[in-house]
Image (cartoon, rainbow, N blue to C red; front, side):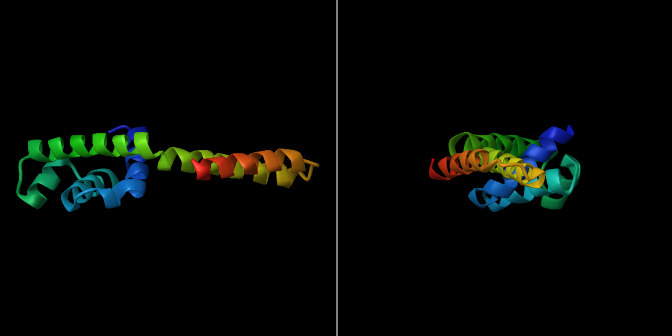
Amino acid sequence: MEIEKTNRMNALFEFYSTLLTEKQMNYIELYYADDFSLGEIADEYGVSRQAVYDNIKRTEKLLETYEKKLHLYSNYVVREEMIDEIKELLEKEEKTTEKIITILDKIQEIEED
């Protein structure tokens, strides 16, 4: 399992887990966060590996659909990048008030969308 996909699924899960069914939450958490194999999850729930695989694939698509529509994760990433940029500017102790105000305005625009 590639690390980028794992990290993305864990992040999307953090934002959208409450929109999932209990079974979807359990399967995704066990698979991505706890690194269980399909077989281990299947044994845990008394179902086939294929059933677990199908459920996980459907849930991955669902999480991506939520993100495509709601943008909670991508907005979070953009906000964090802007906040880091502000911190860097402040650490340099330059006269960057105008740039900081511009970045803060962008952050507010994200919140309003």
